[in-house]
Length: 303
Image 1 (spheres, helix red, strand yellow):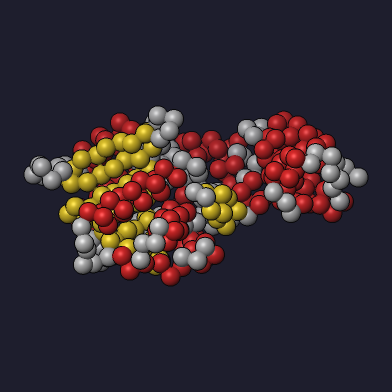
Image 2: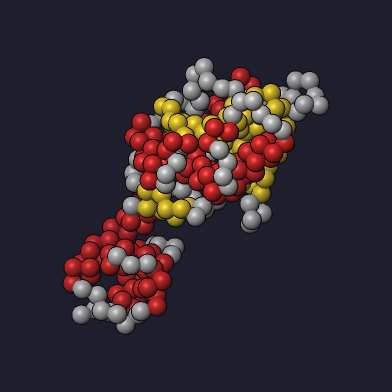
């Protein structure tokens, strides 16, 4: 009977040869999933025997991973902002970088709730919600901080009904389905708003890069192209959202948009062109790379 360590070692070599950037981590996660334990148990008990059924399931997973299928899809879940989200091919796999967008959104919500007594709930929209990662994570944190559901209205929006179903599933599984609503729409719902906070992780990868990923059969090639492809410059979809902001955003509202690490200067230029009289501040992530564009009307200027 095979032992956990030898199975991980052999699989890691296979995945390394197949081009995985994290072959040992992938192997440990997949073996843990096949056995039904946490990854820490696989690491801590390298001499533990693995049953034939679990080994067969593991080898099948390794084969699929070697063909490029993401580990998150193979396991059917992804850890994000302290919670486990169900993921599948209906939506993009949440990235760790997007946790910064969640944190910034929560900061904006809390600062507005504590600044003054509000007669109406704060209106927050997650544009292009996909798996619901941003909206669900925000709702979970607000519940943990005992913010009344009536104080913040969270709407998750996506143009794809299948992705929206996945977002609903994640909201319900984390007990925040009653703190959110869902709307099928292209970017923002018609005749809705004005929004106090717009949060969006829209497609921002250049089309030629997506083409290259698909040719190489890398992990992102298994994800919905619509969730990745941001057009020739990566900012086509984001640009369409910028065009909607003057009507959609409250006078003192803010939009927080995730961008690519090489798009800091480009988003500032695009905002200056599409939103004269607005401010656009680029926020860096922990690695010092551009990650979030914060857009708001410059209240000290006349457009």
